[in-house]
Length: 379
Image (cartoon, rainbow, N blue to C red; front, top):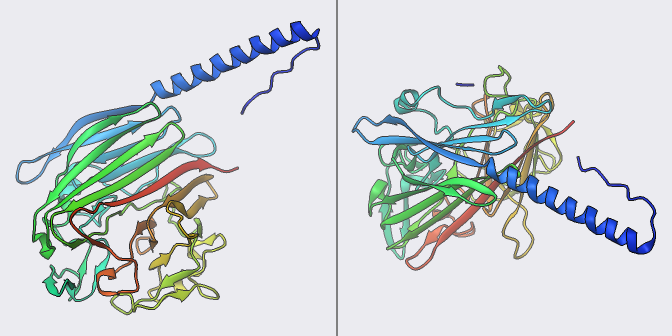
């Protein structure tokens, strides 16, 4: 791994002269702002390079997005994977803040979904089955008797090579990736056409946009499985000292197999409570598994679609990551202490829990969810 705004003091002057002075200064300021904006936009870049080849000879490309502030994000076409994100700390020192592999060959050997797109269905489905309109469908079992994350290679979205094309806009650059999942893949009905777009903006936002359509009723739940370490992935520090705030006062309890029980429970008075900022490691050992692997129910007002999800602060480096999403939930995972996952998504096992927000997608409908990561620092 490889790893303000100044004011302008205007002198006193006769009214006419002063007006002209203000106009002149205003024009100069406007031109200056335009110049800075143009310069910033000109430093937005997206570049493509060959990254490697799969065992069956498919070419895998790597897209690198950069902005004027030193932010860099890399996406490879295998699994539509966000391999690395590089950001500055409070002193301007750059570091990769995603847990990653050193090379394509290392990714090809296998990995715990480091930054990959998970689908067709992120998280767990009980008994690896569900019914739609009275017809039962059996899925690939890859978590004991259950289904998780769309299945192992080669059927899971994380293990397929996506088609890609670069995106260049006035205030953002990015890459759009598409994948067609055939009817019956991993047991899911319907031919699903999925699109994932990553965009890096001039103001340090990383936007992940997900869409999908189908020709038969099916279930869809897409997310990104990045592991974040704001101290720096190569810093040697784990994430226990990261301070986390979540916009969630409820979560989904689960059984020993980490399958939701169907209950929606308050976090109040439990180690699940991140409604106020607290460190990841402060009460992790008090949880069911000794670490976090739980889906939180995000708070949203009626009609609100894009909402605050959470905020992570790493005190030593000063790095901050703020997350907003249209998704109804977020899975917090800290089982790998080198990084933490904030997987914005629909609820686990929603196909079999009628009271959970539906993940059913029918022909003529469009699945569309967006998650935004904003990067910055604090003193």
